[in-house]
Image (cartoon, rainbow, N blue to C red; front, side, top):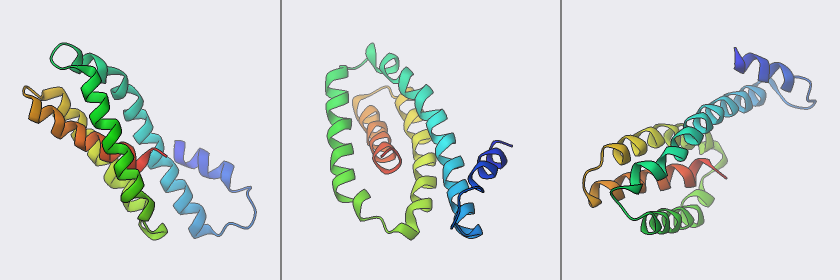
Length: 125
């Protein structure tokens, strides 16, 4: 229902073919779902790690990895592969927060952070 509403509003834009409009609508809806999950789960991230791990090291690791991934992998994604990358990022963010939420050891936490960093670097501009 939301997709139809968004696509109906975009149909007024001139010089966009139907195929391109569909790609934009699909990408937008996938991105909306991602941000819906991302905003809620990122807010709880600090609380999940506060009692068991040091937050400064967690943010340093994930921020550094995100920057490296955006500077190397993400900038080289071909335009034809963007939608596939968005879909992978959506799956990986769920995996990341499950791994982080269930982590009992430091290696498990940092594995989840690596997933989180990949997803954030690949999907969030």
